[in-house]
Amino acid sequence: MTLDAAKKKPTVDLWIAILCFLIVVFEGYDIVALGATIPVLTDPEVGGFAVDEMNWVNTFSLIGVGVGAAFMGRLADRFGRRTPLLLAVLVFSIFTIVFPLMPNAFLMGAVRFIAGLGLGGCMPVALAMMQENAPVGRRALANNLPMVGYHLGAVLASLTGRAAGIEWSALYYLGGGLGLALLAVLWFKLPDSTVARDGSAPRSTFADVVKPKFLRSSVGLWIAAFMGLVLVYGLNAWLPKIMGAAGYPVADSLVMLFVLNLGAIAGLLISAFAADAKGIKGVSMLWFGAAAVFLVLLAIPFGSQVLLTTVIFITGVFVFSAQSLMYVYAGHVYPRELVATGIGLASGIGRFGAIIGPYITGLMVAAGTAYPGAFFLYGGAAVIAVLVILQMPNPRKAEVAAEPERVSA
Image 1 (cartoon, rainbow, N blue to C red):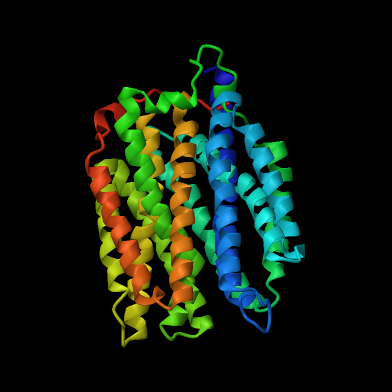
Image 2 (cartoon, rainbow, N blue to C red; image 1 turned 90 degrees about the horizontal axis):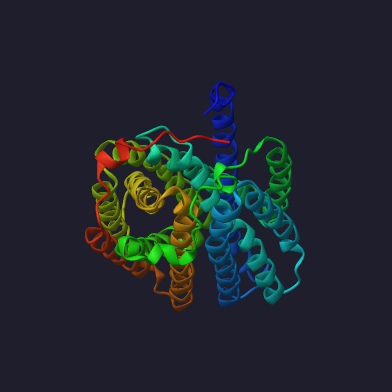
């Protein structure tokens, strides 16, 4: 690295951190925006849509996110980080704005699928940029800081949804409009990665992640990410409906979603410091295990609102950061030229969990069994994740400490 580059490095890293944080805000905002508007859209006096119609709209959205995550991560390792991110934000923003204009559930699903292609591409590329610019021994913190943005977006969407009431379209006009504003800032301030310009870097492909030295880790990451996203998307999409089925008013249920995501923000910071200090494997198992315990506890009726709120907050501490730690694990497993591909595949394949979890939960809501049944479903998924991580190779801390300095563009 030249003297001029060394002088510029702190400024470039600061912009990367700020912009990646803001990019990830939109994924959290988007998924909770739909979750917060489903009760309104399924209200016979407002939206008039059936629950199963909204279930399919949500499913199409998540399929788009999964496809976008898998392929945009590969493009980012092949062509650099900047252009794929710009394209992803543009697609997401435009199709978020047009979503409320769609007259029926079929077109809503189609638009949500296209918006999902852009949205899904944002997170793996942003996290890869953060990890490759992280100080030595701070990869988990670098990964989880933008994930705080995810839950900040979720909190903003839950608050906006409560304020908007039956004017649900305001959530999408706001989200898409802010996305276009961010795109303008990205165009001028987002640097590219050296991955795209390093002619000596080996040419990688999708097939590289299933080579023998990566196979156990890759399969383990995919399964654990699948289970983690069952929890994350199931809770964010359906918690208001689940708690409504338990007898809580819709307004109180949205407050619970708010509390859940506040807990997630705290958990991301705590788990990041823990993983950087104690190692990624043990902390990942602990976080999924604790998530299982508290999810099952939510199946028990609470006579005290304070106690229920406390349990929901602690559940958020473990559930969401457990999933985020899988992206940190990918950063430890793969070489630099495969990190975005690895995170993208973990996110993309894991999105089947994001599809199946909310879909099954939606069926349970329609059948009247979501409370307490959904919490047992989620607790079981977390236990499976613990068992999968147990068999995965443990990245040695000595290898992490020996990482070469990461140089930004």
